[in-house]
Amino acid sequence: MPTRRHGLFGVTTALGLACGGMVLADQPLSAIDWLSQSLVSNSTGGALGEPPVSAYGVQTDTVTVQPLQADSVDGLGILPPAVTGLPRNLWGTDSVADIATLLSQDNGQDLPALQSELLTLLLANSEPPQGSLIGETLFLARVDKLLAIGALDQARALLDTAGATRSPEIFRRFFDVALLIGDEDHACQALKSAPGLAPALPTRIFCLARAGDFDTAKLTLDTARALQTVSPEEGALLTRFMEPELDDTGITPIMPTPVTPLIFRIYEAIGEPLPDTALPIAFTYADLSENAGWKAQLEAVERLSRMGSVAPNMLLGLYTQQKPAASGGVWDRVAAFQDFDAAVSAKDQSAVEATLPQVWAKMTEAGLEVPFATLYGQDLSHFSLSDDAASLAFQVMLLSPDYESLTQIYAPKDPQQAFLLALARGSLQGVPAPDPLDAAIAAAFVAPVLPQTLQAQLDQGRIGQAILSAMTQMRQGEAGDLRAVTEGLSTLRHLGLEDVARRSALQLVLLKRQL
Image (cartoon, rainbow, N blue to C red):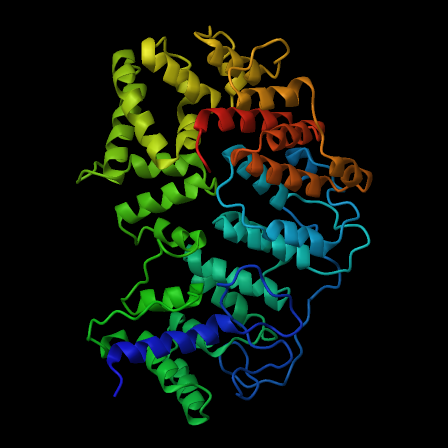
């Protein structure tokens, strides 16, 4: 006889298939493999062999799900050209499939300047690619990229421009984002208002239970059991979800693969939350909730800050929320940050000189130099620091958004600082490059080297693809390909992204790590 643990493994596997293993008919496979299967096939109105039903269990006529509007959503965005600085005809004549493939590439943790520009590109309001079929493939690829880097607020805003219930695939993402940001009730209400979007069994029961309609939820599950459209293992877990007090064994289920947001929330609801540190970064967002402990919130905001997915002020707010009650790891970073913040707030120059080296070491350790610089670069420009503290303040100011204005009156102390100061001003003619990386950067500003593929992209108006290609080159440069550094920076400058090029170059020199 299988043990309880084995039984729960069966539950997670079965529910994983029900929540994430199937794909909607005639819909593209997502680059995100952990999306919940929140809806049944778009060819019927029922789930798992049941009679056609509406979102909350009321029988209806069979329906066919299709987009509510026939126009393309591929160009929808929340940032107009006046804000992004990008042309409205951003994608030119390239195929949607090729652009989606570029976006699906796993770029890990980019330089923060590139990560910021990627967010701008993904959120830009533009025309759909010329000559492309009417549809949503590029829109979904952009949303999926936002999910892949943990930018859930931005993904939610982009989904809202299309309308949550516009199509099954758009709702699927809307529902999962809502689960992860803690807005499940809104998602369930949207599903209830769109009977054409037939929910899968776990989704239906989840929403019924969230609405407090346990009788209908139990009736739905009992009917599915009678029709043998749910396995015993699925039934056991769904029963436990609706009545968690029925199980007091305390045995933790084995983590399913993949974990979907719906599974994640169900396990949280039964009192056996799955650890999100081993899950995709989008799941980390759940730990920003006030229901999570402070340590979990801190670790979540650090992870998301490294990806540039949350504003630095969120890091500031959580770091200064209360006094650390322990030491080591994140607690030492919080303590160092609070000491420095207090010194800056008090305008105590001696205290700033004493605390800056400690906090900078902790921020470097956590890969949070740029968020820190964004928060404090302007403040540090008002202090006349000495020795090591002055050099550190120079680095912080160079990594801040106001790198050029903040360093105007700084007097360089060595050739490296002179090079960085010239780079911040975008004027490197005649300035010695201290090392090969600096020389590769200087070439992009003095004698730009453009890749052969760039002109073809520009001839076809493929500005977005050219930007993505430049980012790929910069990644190759981070790995040691110095020609790629020159070509990537040259491309960014040629496209008019001067600020992105300078910030990327400064970060490449100052961060000095494999990102």
